[in-house]
Length: 567
Image (spheres, rainbow, N blue to C red):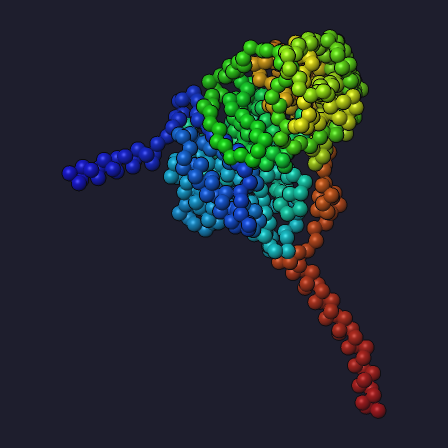
């Protein structure tokens, strides 16, 4: 009887430990992303321990999923930086315990639940005496350099992929290294999907994100981020959904949660099928989001339809998320629309680039006692066109953009565009949009690099649902970056409270951004640093110079001193 009971236990263990939720022949897989608040603790090590324990609890308690993604920048810091093995080393930190404790524990957690786990860490690497990777900056005097790194564990807790962030947020450059040749990182799963992955600000550049899609034909992207939202075009979910739509790929995006610091917004997206799940939070939140994700080879997912439209004078709106303002809009060719316009057709040009607009609105009637203040506010709107390279993304890197847009402003001045009314202000929708069509002929990309996508936003800081607008490209933009593209974006369902409705194109400029850093300047010569070959070479030269100087002095002094002795 004991032998039979033991056999059942071993059999149960076998099936549990080798359980695979999705299989290569399945048309879908199950994914989870985690929006996570900042960890607490009065020291770096306590904060790392707190974050690690929270991540482990989430992995332990999550329903059956194939892959789970955690945000950027939360797990550790330079004080608790860890070495990270390259996937070619075939290392499982759970039992090859030569790493920081949190990396070991999360490897074990992935193995325990048999889930692919993606985390983001501060990685350290030795760089003295010519060791380490080829980076833009010199090796620090400590002989240790740091990277912002994604780590992927497979179902057995083995490190199967590592990616080092290529495009840093401005303050990161002071202490974080960047590879001269960007990582292009992928991993293949046992459920038949090959993922690419990158981090946060990388999304606004050709390498590695668009390169993964266009050159490696990757259809599923993992994206840990700590995003700083900017209005009117670069809100977190707004950008994530637009990027997935423009590239027509699945995207698993996990953001940190610090709304008063401009950071919130996570989701799972199915390319042109739109978001499967996504949320923005007004308070720091830790939340798990799960969705079944269609595999791209099985065709396009049909958009999820939204409820029938109802005109509303007052709609729910998000006011608890701080945002940056996009100062680029100040140089757009724009036109302020009259406060009570009901219909217009307009062609607006910035140089040779033109956008055509056809817009209709209807008055929204108020019910009794619906307006509670004596001075309710209503957004004003501008239409705009721009094509050029005198722009930046969040004032960090130079860009070349082409844009056709309608966006909201809090008054008639262009300087009010990109802001929202504060929480204490009553806001009403005097009109609702019944028609909103825009078209633009987007120039060819001379370097073959261009991404055109919708950029839309409502008062909830969420994009207009893909079932509520129509999008067309002629010819198809993705395969034809060297050709001009006619793009049309139009509402297919009326909307109450638009903040942004735009066609946004990134031409991935090659104009450099040096970020006010010495080592990024064109004529920078790397100085010798402690522990580096340059230091030893300079020390030897210095010693030889001193020796020759002493010999020279001796040659001058000794003969005269010898003559004095003889006399």
